[in-house]
Structures are given as C-alpha cells and as structure tokens.
Length: 125
Image (cartoon, rainbow, N blue to C red; front, top):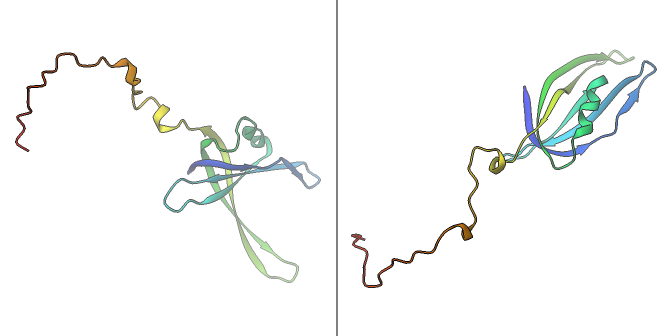
C-alpha cells in the first residue's frame, strides 16, 4: 500500500524501552477533496530514511498496516493500529515531471509581419 501527499511534520527519532527500539513519525497530508493528515511511523533503521526529506516536500510512502491486541491488568481487551512506513520517495511536481513539455517564453515567438489589414476572416460565426 502507499500514501501520497505533502510532508506536514517530521518528528524526532525516539528511543523507547531498554532494548533500544527506535521510532520516528512523519505526517503526510493527502491532496484530495478532503485532505487527510496521515501519521506514519518508521521504526529501527528505517527512521534514517526521513533524514533526506523536509516539510512541504511531496512524497510517496510505502506502508504496512499493523494491528495488535492488548489486555489491561483489569482484563479489558483493546486493539491498536499503526501505519508503518518502510520506503519513502520524493515526487516531482507534475509540471516538472517531464510528461509535459515546458512552454517557451513569449520572447521566443516572432511577431507576424505579413498581416493585411484588408483581409477579413471568412469564418461562418
């Protein structure tokens, strides 16, 4: 699965527990009619992938959905979900992606010199 959008926030790397577990969150805002702010967690060595990105950058993030069950000391069962990122790549803005040729500046066009002011268009409308 993947999420595409613009980086809204990149968190600091946190070390949790005595085993040295590392995690780092990034919030990506989707660009659709109703934008969503998706918090994606990178863990362990994947936290370093976020070092090359900055707020405002358009990205595509490959994700896995993770779910777990937890039972409280009182016996109450709860369920938690995590969106875990495992790859991130920058997206180029559409106009600069190479799919659309650039428009030359107006100065690149020669003005017409063979215009006859007596000619009228013969269009029927």
